[in-house]
Length: 213
DNA sequence: ATTTTCAAT
Image 1: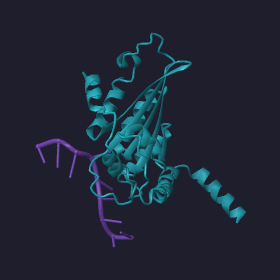
Image 2: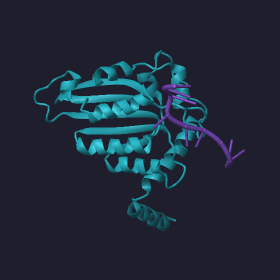
Image 3: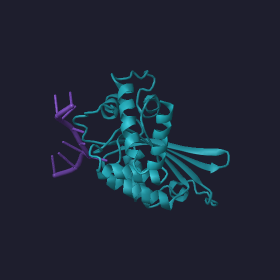
Image 4: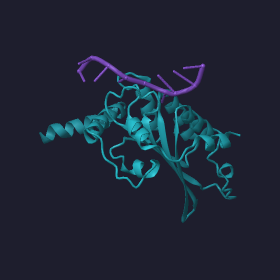
């Protein structure tokens, strides 16, 4: 039963030290041989009611989550809410990834999303996974996600994650050194990656800048 | 910056 497996793998709260270690957005993240994925699933049940699900997965469970989405596990019947008129159901899914998705995951996600236009996905990433070479497939994967309508941004503030996914939530989040600066640099790089293929907009922006200066 | 990278056998 894939759904049972999903709930077994989905843990709700993350230990503080785990969260900080894996979500640190430093440029050279040594030893992060794991990927953490915090997710929030919002589902519009009726025009004025929302259901809300959250938790975190890691490593292979990310692939499992993908597989479950592909298998239709987000369908209301499987989730046990069984609305008979589920035609207009809308999902809003937010991912907070420690590493950005690899090219394979991006490809599968994009494909899944094209078949499920009632699902909106936002992805926040702490670090970019294998995105240094300009022609890397990981970069192309991120662009593919963007074309599939995914909003990809870097995590600039982790307070929401801290309050939502981390145990001992009463403790105030203390930002690590360079959190903001790293996030600015990362955002710039991500922007560069996503700009490729949007040359018209880019040219326009450049012209504008030249005129101004 | 010369560096990092989905962790289970």
